[in-house]
View 1 (tube, rainbow, N blue to C red):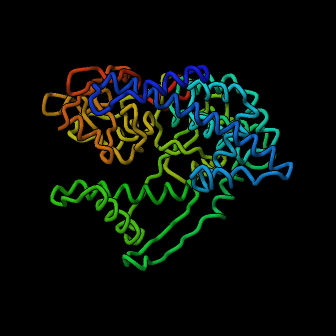
View 2 (view 1 turned 120 degrees about the horizontal axis):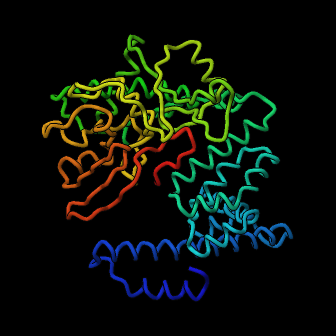
View 3 (view 1 turned 180 degrees about the vertical axis):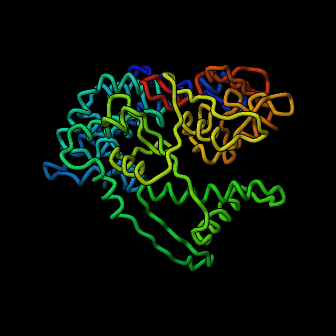
Length: 411
């Protein structure tokens, strides 16, 4: 959508549209039009926020976030995000133009705002200097993947320029960690709110995941997913420290030896970045289980022959996949079942070429087994998802973690 005339044409088309009777392809066009019009409206809000900021500086209006909250019907959080969005568009006018034209969404702009929020001025300026490359990425990536890339770029620039330790941010997060507990007076339910740094959060959830797998293996439990989570949490917190917990950290050899480089992988299994110095310390204190990735991010086949995936195979899969392999899914690996692409009962083998993570909480595992969807995968882990009506939904790489700069799958 290039301008007002196009916006009017899209709006006119939407006014006449009836999504209740559309088929899949018509719904795709309808949703694209809605997103395009929304992006154009968001670009108008950017311009209004900028003008409001100018008026506020002259003492002729209130702060933009107050106007957005009161007159725009937004929450305080959304209003503050609107202010940050305007600042990003001011320093990156190409993103503002792309937003007005529907080429990117407000979520893409917000991803940049989040990435530069805590950067020093000089580091933020270097981030912004890559605006053309960032826009090219935003136009071809979904918001989740673009947000991850922005975070990785900010981490790399910060590590290059920061004068302090690369663990300073983690230490700040540790100091901010806290636990609060209260009772809801209406329901009587007890609330426990825990804020943790990424490392201790990963340790906690590694223990929860282990107990959840044990509970899930008990076929007689019959617990719904939410209750399974609760039981696993309670078991992890009351096990008395008898359970040995594995924390999975992915790092390429060059980063471990020499520090961050352009295509570094140094993160927890869910993609949360870690300081290299912290990982080196972990390496001194922990048993190291190597998983070697090839140039395309494929892990070596390190286990086969059993009905269920071995722990070695889970580690290899975790090294390749942060999340469920459905192209629109961001459910973390440890909340997924290991799925046989060619089912075991139809002769499928339990080796890496035939295994991939599918989530339970968003039911992609259920969709394949009972919902009529099919997923196939080639030797180089290119998957094809097919809808129950036989139409191809998506084809692409399932790998979303590649240390040698290979583009990951689109979100």
